[in-house]
Length: 341
Image 1 (cartoon, rainbow, N blue to C red):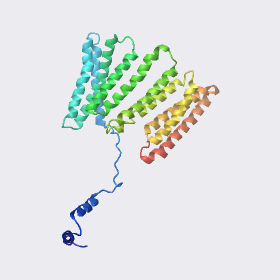
Image 2 (image 1 turned 90 degrees about the vertical axis):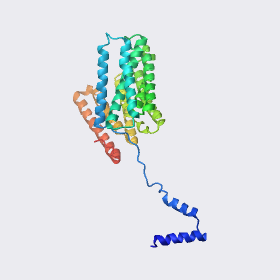
Image 3 (image 1 turned 135 degrees about the vertical axis):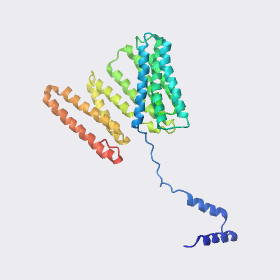
């Protein structure tokens, strides 16, 4: 191999003779420095898992909120509305302000992060309670549930959380804001339809639509928030559980057979969604409600043949459900490291 001095001398001679110019040398060097496309893989962002310390700080926040509520309850009969609002919404706003100060401080460590999470949680709960105290003082007390006023309050509280999230950028405030805004939809419908005395099936439809709206709204909102895409599936498991639970409750109504059929189809659909989305929480939900379906069918529609036959059918059905869930888990989840242990 030629030495470095020989190569440099050749380059000088080439430059002096005009065989090669400086721009061509620079181009050759830039080509050598370009990375090879497709070699470096960018790992997908995953939601951060709560540590034991984070959970302890959140528990502390809940205890602090319980303390605030205890003071409000003890002073309810003797205090005035302004004091109750100050203790709830005022305290919540103050805790939010402290959390914002901690978030913007250049000095950060685990203790400050945990304290900020606790203050955000306590502040949010206090602001929500304060919002409802203000609403009920306006409409004349807590003697009657007013769904329409409650829906307006939920929408305002949700907007407040989304606004606070725009400056503090905490996952909790964003998710809470989405949840409160979406919760205003069923509350409004309940307020409009409550005097019509519709059967339970109508309310089930409202709940199912609200659950679907929650998952859709979460995806739409986080899509507009750079770096928050990891939260797109945050409410999927909750929405599925609420929707299936409402269907199961309606399976005991006059149209129980229809709802049971819809529920069975939904469970198999969720099994499929859990596979394509690699979501083990959806798999757990589908498995749980499959067990409920099997037990319900065994004892509701075959109890006339005797308790022994119902128990045998339930056992066979449960074993079959367990086999299906285990098969899906082993075949589709263990390959990607998401198997349910």
